[in-house]
Image (cartoon, rainbow, N blue to C red):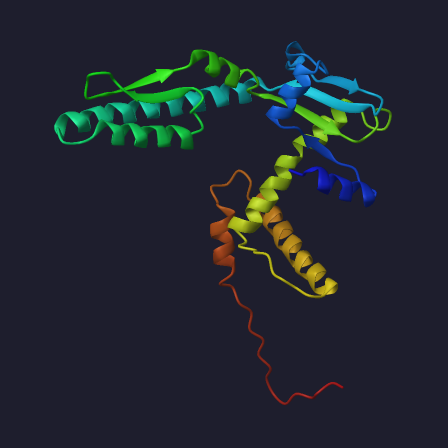
Length: 250
């Protein structure tokens, strides 16, 4: 979620960070021999690299790997169906151009990020589109599915790999909080010129989320959506009626 510039800002602030590196960075580290592909497993594996003692915590999530595999299969099947539909269209419309259908199909493949694996081509001497699949690229693309590498700047003596992994998993709760603020609470960024107003806005945002979280915990197990019930609660109003003469309190 953060780049090198943000990491330097965090260091200057006296804070620590826990990040995961990209697939491209993982591939580069494997090629340079920092760690090997066989080290990725269900168990946490820690590598200390170089004089700077950079820490890498490796793991492979088999459930995530299977999820990615199924998602990719669905995408490939969707492309195959589009090719079939294009061929049916070409048969029904003799004046339609195969090159146009081929271009549309390859654009769809590129949007799905399957262009290294799939390619649509016009069959030689025929009015139909063929789909070719590169099995080698498919294998290379799926090699790191479910694999991730955590890179903290915390020392090994201070925080063990199990604790760091647990802290990394808590990121899901943070993402849930941001998603709730944006979708349910409809809190959007506001430009404020003064620091105390910015802090006040953030306090209101966090208070709103804490109320939503409390209600979600209270209604856990019930067939109730917090978003819908909060809308009902917003219709509740209080009225204060004063009878008789009142005195102004100074």
